[in-house]
Image (cartoon, rainbow, N blue to C red; front, side, top):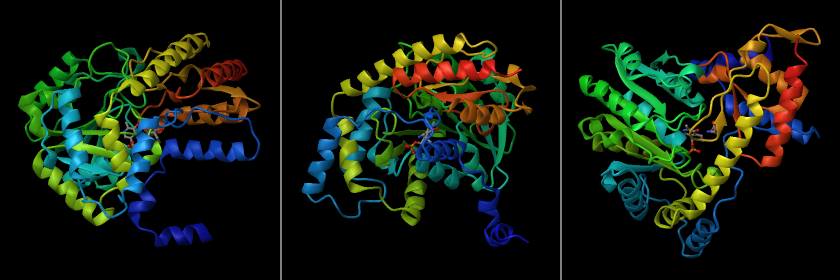
Length: 405
Ligand code: PMP
Ligand code: GLU
């Protein structure tokens, strides 16, 4: 037995069965290659390249000086929860009282809190695919059974209400999805969400975790629709949101839920044993973010939209790469399956993982394989970086694909 096998035997089945996050794995690889001197363009991590707006940083500095340095209430400072409650009303026309809101150390923790609070072993968790990598890992940690509902680029990677309904069984407990979506950038319209609300109304034992972390990064020209706005099913919905994307605050670690009171209470209890309340300084910064004008956010969104249009034009020109126009978030999810079976230097590429590793080594461009997002044909490209880098990356991608035969 090797040393690695011996230590694996001592770890729990839980951790041995868990996949490493594909997004984090790829960004780690690209960071290491960069450190070795390789000229990598990293399009792997979904992280705004912009700095956190100044007014938010200033609020954090004031918080330190005013002595916000102690343990915080587990579900967050009352004043932050009040600001979140007002934000839900202002942006989403949702009524969540402060005790229905639980602030966490990032939307990722909020998702874990909810899933671990709701799922019993064997409960089915429906995942409209492609889905964000951590949904499946967290549901499996809770010993839920993930059921994927597939979609393709031809339907803009959206599942229909009818498809969803067909997958519901007496064991279905939870549906998890994001809109705008990571990894596809798709945005469910008001009418599509209304139809999904209809399915939920007919299935009152099914809950939905709606991940709205990309809410502001929406190019449709229409106001973001929250599923919880359909009042007849609001008690079945947990709305997850956070500060990482809309306010460029990935490192601050701040997320939250609005949920039925009994679910919020369960998440509070869970968090009280795992992490306690999140960072006091980040919370004061988050309060400033939500109570100030959103102009800096919309400025960033304008830039993202320009980049989306640029990259769409460039990707469309690469032969064999099938791409759609995403309506939100900052990702493309091109279908590269026409290259499966093609080779370079004697190595045949058969999966999106093969393609992403090839692109990393041959083009020095880091993208994430679709497999961990529940898709076997696509790769994910984040365009949250400068236009200059995006132009160069697309040129490298084009050259690398051209070498495959
Ligand atoms: N949900 C989605 C869809 C995401 O893309 C991310 C990535 N950051 C998260 C949740 C987690 O965000 P946070 O940084 O708030 O943990
Ligand atoms: N959510 C981002 C992504 O999908 C950040 C990485 C992560 O948390 O997985 O790339």
